[in-house]
Length: 217
Image (tube, rainbow, N blue to C red; front, side, top):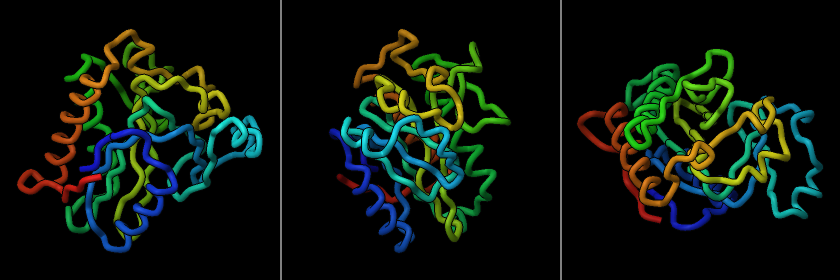
């Protein structure tokens, strides 16, 4: 596992991702990034509200990457979970992997904050059960030769500065929410507790008998 220790440069993650894919080395990374906007393979430029040069002048990076989905944003306070998994080795279908990945997040949020989340069949990600318009977790995964990369982004206490520059996944940024915005404890101790539960859930469904390869940052 690689867990947050400051902001992890996004381009450095992309380089690491490619090395892991080529070697088919499995691991899970728990990271945070400086303000960054990414466009997936289904991006629509109408959902990018400001130009690249202006964004970069404001300290917001923008990258177009090989994952599913439209535009999304990463920023400090948002936990990004990158799972690099060999689906053939784990004997998992793509559908089963995605369903279990989201189920792992749903359970970890419930145990950590008593936060009830649901999926939307028409819009990927996780939403508040109490207000299904409000999105707290985005998902975008790449499957190349049945080896996964990218993953989920869970809003803990980010300020949504980068989100204001896009229509995230085609939605208004004001539809986004976070643990902090809900008035819940978004401190580091609770974030670590969430990571611990999520890590346990992921290893449980990926292989009940053997955990994924661990790493140190």
